[in-house]
Image: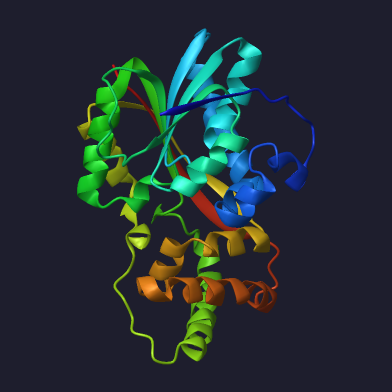
Length: 299
C-alpha cells in the first residue's frame, strides 16, 4: 500500500469546470469519461452527503472505496466531511492499476492508500472501516462474487458502519419513456458495427447487462448481515455527452451489442457515433435513466 496526502479547496464552479475538481482531464479522457459528467457527480454528491450525515461528527473516518477508479467517490466524501471537522482516511481499491496511478495525482483526502485487489477477497484486517462504497460497480460481479464481496465488506466494517451501494444496471433502470430511444439506438448501432466488422461473431451478454431486480440486491445485502436503512430510485437526465460517455465502457458496449472481448472497442465506437442521430430522430434533449441507491449499516 502506498500513501498520499492531498487537501483541496471547495470551489463554486459549474459544469465541467466543477467536475474537474474531482476528475482531471487526463482521468476523464483515459479512464472515467462518465465520472466527469455533471449528472453523475450530482448523483454521488447526494448519496455521499447522506453517508456523511450517518457518520456524524467522527473525528477521523476510514473509508473503503471499492472500484475506486481515479478517486471520484473519495474526493466527494472528503468535501462532505471536511467542513464538519472530520478527517478522511481512504483506501482506494481497484483492479485497474493505471487508474489507481492516476488517482494518486487526483484524489482529495487527508490520507489515501491504494490497493490493487478484488472486492470479493479483501486483504484487509477485520473491523477497520467506518464506511464502504460500491459506486456503480457491484453489477460487474457475477452473483457468487457479489455475495462474497458483500460478506467481505461486512467482515472489514466496524460495528455501526455504513455501506453505500448504487447502480444504474438493474431491472428498473430504464423508465418506460426511454425505451424507444434504446430500441432505436441499439438497432442503429448494430448496423454500424456490422458495417465495421462484417465477419464478427456475437457473444453472450456481458455481466454488466445482466440486470437484477432491486429486491435481489436488497436480499444480497441483508444476507451478508447488513440492515438496510434507506433505499431510493433516483431519476437522472443524461445529456448526449453523458450517453456517449457510458458507451465508452467496454462492458456496457459488449452487453448492449452482444460483442466479444475482441470487438469491444468497435462496439463502443458504434454506440458512440450513433448517439447524436438517435437523439435527433426522437427530438430529445435528455435521456431519463434511473439509479438504485441503497444505504445499510452493520449493527
